[in-house]
View (cartoon, rainbow, N blue to C red):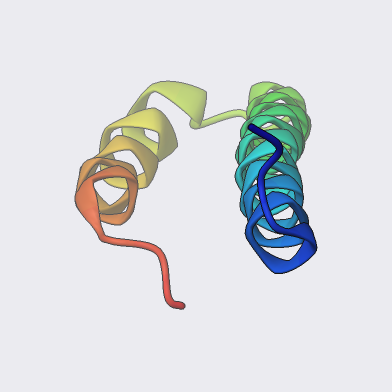
Amino acid sequence: MAQPYEERNSAVKTRRQQEDQRRMAFRRAIEDRCQQRQLLAQIGDLPDAAELNFWQAAPSAGRRNAQPAH
């Protein structure tokens, strides 16, 4: 027996939303990685890179564990 139109439409909409959420999470991960690489490249250009790397690493752990805003 065929499913009602509304039920199929709802399932399609839900699947697309889940796919969009996965795509956006992947995109955010790529952007975060690019920003991290840029920061590390900039820090690498500075003379006191070892000291700055210590302070730069501390806040990133807290940010990585934070829940994303909805």
